[in-house]
View 1 (tube, rainbow, N blue to C red):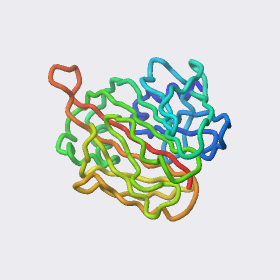
View 2: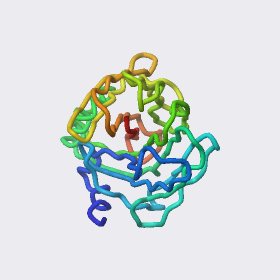
View 3: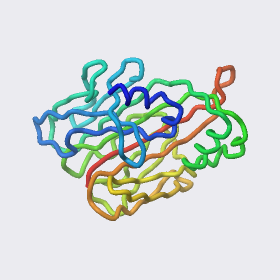
View 4: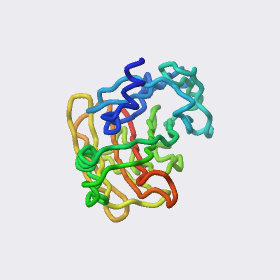
Length: 243
């Protein structure tokens, strides 16, 4: 546990993915589900304990509405809930901003890895930024509700049911509007990695070749507001589900 906490704030961890890992993606009505926070690479991660210092929002949206996910401070899993209604539900996590400084070499490596071409011209400069995490997971069984939005600043929204559709069609929203040119990556636990970029309407289609648990992720960067003590804000969005 201590290692995962340190990993989250270590320099290399900036380029690590962050996602939600429920104890089951297909709970029955009335079943208790725990939700872990994970940080890692290639869809292999370490647990991140619940922390009021990190957490800004941790909720679930289903047919009954939206409610807070409870949990115990400094423990993993970070949350627990009970499924009250049949159908699909979406779990959402939003972090508070955290400051990070990267030397020019590391910043350039990050921009290349995450495909943030909108600011690649700045790769020779050092990086001072705030980063934010926006993670979602689809749980339950059914065909409705997969497209529920949380209104996160950066959000991956399915437009077809990711549990069954082929290809899976997604939309990238930045501040509620479609975002063009964002790199989207889908990864499974066996090393399959697929990428695509969002079109002028923020849409992307990815043909997932097999069933299983999938992580879809994307990173976007924008200039920090004038007068702040950083140059950039990096926004990390993820979506996990099981087909």
